[in-house]
Image 1 (cartoon, helix red, strand yellow):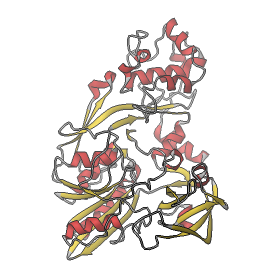
Image 2 (image 1 turned 180 degrees about the vertical axis):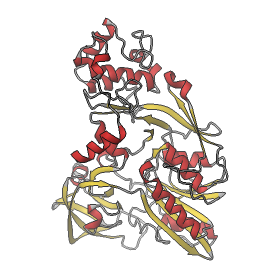
Image 3 (image 1 turned 120 degrees about the vertical axis):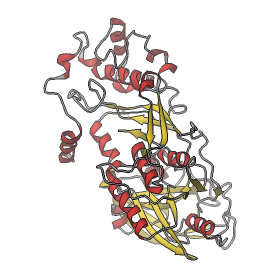
Image 4 (image 1 turned 90 degrees about the horizontal axis):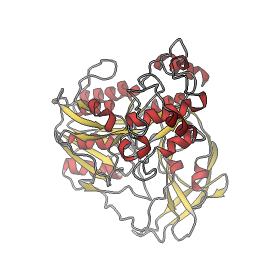
Length: 481
């Protein structure tokens, strides 16, 4: 890990030869240094900057960009009133947990950069948790995703395996999130029996004696999870499960589309059901891979906060990926997209921004409802990656803008509703990429017109249990980096 950080340091950040403190106001004492960066960075970039009296430009007569190293006695006194960088940041987040659930202060910028590359300490397992039928407090979990090549994958854990205990301890409403996310865990599996009925009250989970122990390891996930070519009723269908918009895997994404080109696919099913977002630029490049006939036309617009209005950005369809290689474009005028409420930010951008140009058939459930963008802000003269201070490792990741499509439509906070409502089954997730996996099967039925698909049961009263611990890092984020 130390070696990895040195590589990141050399490749991504150019530090100045002289200490940044030599250029700072003599009245700015060291104890206020990080807090000064936080206030000025939030003042300069935050989308809700005018909504917080203490963050407005007229509060201290200074602002982040124009007065990068200025201070006043009143301002220094204000900074001294906070006991830590975290406390001032919390005070500058507007309606935290409600209006703003996505601004972050990173104490370690190196760990942040690792997250953006998909590198985390993980066992590669993603879970959905539900109440055990007939129990007031017992819980079961289903493995919904296993990252390719992760320790969980290598240990033999597969999607659609049911878990009722960890380390011999029964999962309950109070312990399931802690038990499922341990660094080392022995998962105790069970068989699910629906008693051949369409109701859930009589379903039974029976421990089957199988247990597998898995440890978390440092792992970099390739978000291009599955690439398949399916032939059904003389229709050639490409299937891509894509789990995060990350620039460091654009080559792999482009190779997936080369596979589709070689197979002469006529239809594409883009599976974003667990894709929590990522890079706006990567989303723009994916759009050109799907289409290709709109190169150079406006795709999405980012509208910044009050102090960055002059840097509002239009993202155009672009026919190259990071590094300059040409996109392998399919020229499609219709695409199928599979979604759940875990489909967020850049996933929603993809649906919303393609719709003015081609037909997008969304199958699944409502998306998350995240239209805002973030930016990684460093403590440097221009808040970028050049001459970053060596005095601390804090970095900001505030909400900085709203992203619309070419018609100025934002993603609603209630999410994007599907054209075809179809929930994932709580009793059988199916195998990803298998033509009989329920959501994919529903898309194939629409493509072929066969009408052959399973009836989707309602899950009223059988809702998924939520836990922040079960979410992936940076889920729900759409960003500049």
